[in-house]
Length: 141
Image 1 (cartoon, rainbow, N blue to C red):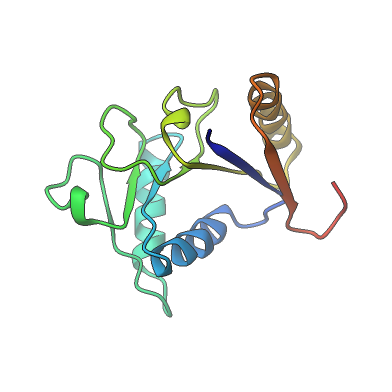
Image 2: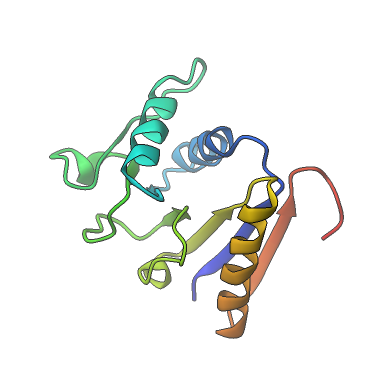
């Protein structure tokens, strides 16, 4: 069963994606970032390529190097090249999440983002997924 994790109160979502991607790549785990839309996918790709300390190679799902890339960033879920980790930014959640070993939801600090995240949280909980939650601000959840 897919392991579901929520990271709440994240001030910089792209920085959290980079942090989680770096940890995964160091463990030889592949990551798919499912962006909310095309502009978010482009921004995420640019951010990952520009990390000053870590090299976080990434590409789109239809790139010829997708099968070899440790990080896939796209707004489309029509092709999957691996099933390790999915970082989801889509609402409602994509139907492909259950194919992955691990699903990560990153929730910002604004109330609108939290409201949507609560809906996704309830969706996973109501279907029997065990959910782990982490608060970036160190508050008890």
